[in-house]
Image (tube, rainbow, N blue to C red; front, side, top):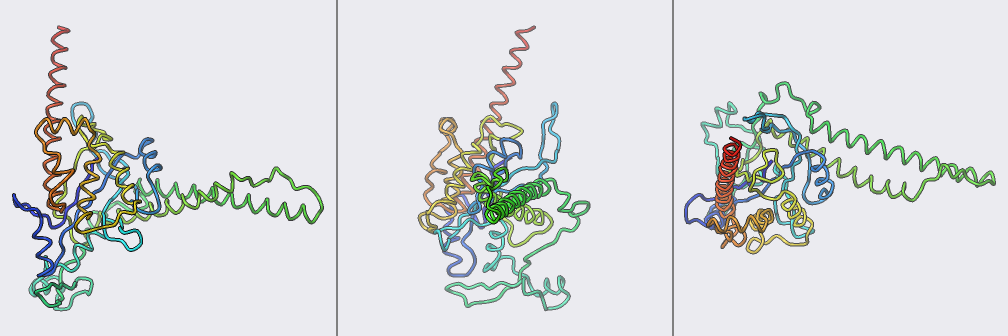
Length: 379
């Protein structure tokens, strides 16, 4: 399980702050860059509790996918198929709440559009399509202050049919779990609606016949409240199921522009249980709190990178902050970057990953020394 950080159009130059991606696209066309995060955690009793606590119809979508994870078996780690929860967070300008939380597919499509990178030459187009004609979906329009509006041809989508061999959506464990949950909710809703109709008919019959209604058929206030809550739960279950289906399809194709940088940070809620890691619930709580807030997107003061910096910092406990500071790590590169950009996110996340790896490696060495000393004492 991990906190995965995605960046598009970040700079790897040592002293770059990412300003090139702000100025260049305005004059020559293209995208300034983007960053987002995805949190995964196990689909067990504790994981269910987190998903229920922080799940909502709006904002961050929490769903499930089936992943291959490494599980410790004896002295080694072996691959194992496991259903996990995932929550994707991508801060974009919004129209009603000042901001909008994108999906991964939305981000990849957005970063593909209006960008001249990856343009196909005429010879490549002939090889791919057999003629100069190509699908409309492979074309995008680029415009900047110093160039006129122009149409370019790029590859937008690639299928990976070999990955589908032997796997169908209906056989996917994550899909099966979410679909069964939706079916159970629908069955409960149907039962309560039938109970309500039966009681309403009983009230009408008792009125016509001049008798007291059979209160054993009573449709209680608790029943009514449950019907209301079921409507919300069913909307959420439907949204989760759709996210799962989209995620499953994405494993077998590439749409839009893949992230230029992918960094994984260790989390405390993990089968490998690293000693030094980010707090899963604190990260999830911050993602959801931002998505539900009235805070507006602002390219200068609170953009996609600012939001990601805040989420990453939220996962660092005071104890862990103190430990990495004492080890010489500059925490300000995460909490207060000079310029919040995909470049600042990429560089600070890379350094944080290296720092946590170093601390965890030292912890393993200390544990081994302690174990060896205990053996010597016994002897």
